[in-house]
Length: 449
Image (spheres, rainbow, N blue to C red):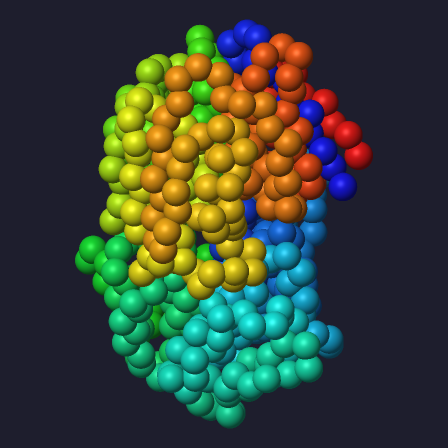
């Protein structure tokens, strides 16, 4: 068990830092490279759960995956129809998004693949149901489930999915299956969720069209070939959001996060922070394969309470704990709606790998002396003047809770009253150099094992 001992900040946080690579973008780059014709090179891919799971699955399915002398991931693809049956069960371990995306990729294969899964994984069950509706075979298997095979000469059929939940993992799985279909894939969601896969497919010449929350992929207008590319994976916006939040908690701070992916469908946190009056500027550096990249400049500024909900919160779902950290320092009561298990695009309560509940966030804030209340789909947070209360909290192995607690602790107590964040080891997976980065910026944090 890892415990972080976080001392109240006695000086501003100052400096510039890179952030870890976006795991979701690495996942997509590896899976598409496995289906490409030729050798793809993925630069700066994260060694995080979803990317690592995608690499292992690609190898198991017949693609060559190696790490070159510069640390880039080199994938020699099989072509769209060149994958082969794996010799054993594919276990994605902590790569929950990788497993769900693989369901779509495997749905159109002429062989059967078994995948390991957690019990009661409702999100994967919804994906399998959608894939069965277009003709895929998806059945229970010991310790998980099996996808495939399609009979010889048969292809997946057309499908139109009207998603009330708006789950981006469901969207990605359905679109990936559309690469192997005989006709149109059409997907509608209640609000535009992260669109990394749509951008990646478009950059590779796949005939995909988006009109607001409606996406259409028509393989009949495509030659079925994915080109091999060199892809540079940008930094994770969620990690940059943590540095932005830290700069707002510690007076006088100025922090820059470099080489960050700032895709608008993921940038809800930045929009909410701007509305709250945060010191914030996004310096654009163009696009890489459809993904906008920037340096994010953040500096301390007085914050004001806001009301946030709807599509803006949908674009900030994984950053809601950090929104609440900002709210703890804002004048007035911030009301966040359409978040958590009550939201139309949120995962079911307790879904594996999908972050803390609003109740968990409220309990964390209360431990630091912040007045707040949570309910189905929302949370109210009343900002507090002066230092927060020093606290001893249990992050329960959740990276988002541990990082948020660390940031709150920087603005808590006096010089002799550090806070302790127990079971914080998950940070090492989500943001491996989080503690080292905060130390380099001027924070005092000790690590106890």
